[in-house]
Length: 328
Image 1: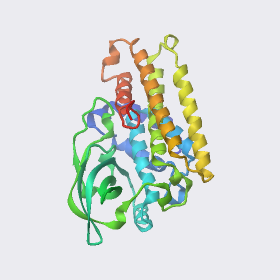
Image 2 (image 1 turned 90 degrees about the vertical axis):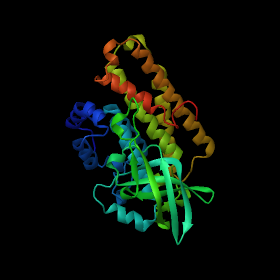
Image 3 (image 1 turned 180 degrees about the vertical axis):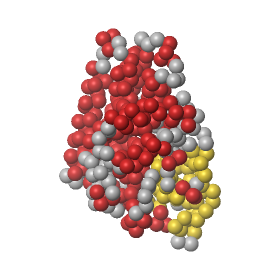
Image 4 (image 1 turned 90 degrees about the horizontal axis):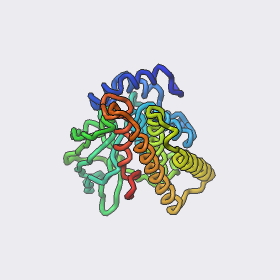
């Protein structure tokens, strides 16, 4: 299922309130996510991916966030973790790819400590949030290792979930924390997310992580804002011009960056910094637009059972991600 079919749209929208109350996406929705292969949007075909051009994958994530914020966010964070497959030990990657229902999520927070021991590392740590943890079969987490930060692949059985996700929005993302009790992990499960250390030659793994994350996350915001605009009405009273212009400009930058990466050119730190700033600017413009429209709504907009309220809560929760909020 490479397109978002009407039956799936109806299923997600009809079960969205249930998903909030349960704190996770319903099983029928998750099964269709896996069947559609959306967790592997921009991975190459030899990694069981859809092989989608990165800008088109970004637009697909925007459409999924338009459909439902928690849905789009969960797929975005998990597909971002699946991107790490391109940096793993090749043998380990092969072992993962033969598994049915593979779902990787994780945290970019450096909440762990790794100490060398007998060809591996003695590890422990705790991380505040990992979106989609209820469906994860593996998680990645950042550790401090001899003065540097590295990522580690963890089996779901090696972690403990900390049920701490109690935000006003994005309730169905099951973005709970997790912890790792002291244990030994083999060296081959450690990896670094830097382009020149990629273990797979596809250009997608040459995208700097900050760019990939900023583009995929901010287009979740734009997808939710688009849905809010549809539900809110009163468009004649509020201009969307500034928001539309910033979105179009950032999408064009995404296409330019991707074209450069495919030609073997890596965006430098100045470019990365500029794109991250533009993503924050677009997020703030989306928040401003949504808040202006919210002021024209009736009291029903404050009813948590309404889709408009759910979208409003999801936008304001997602916009607090460290890469999107106004203070970087």
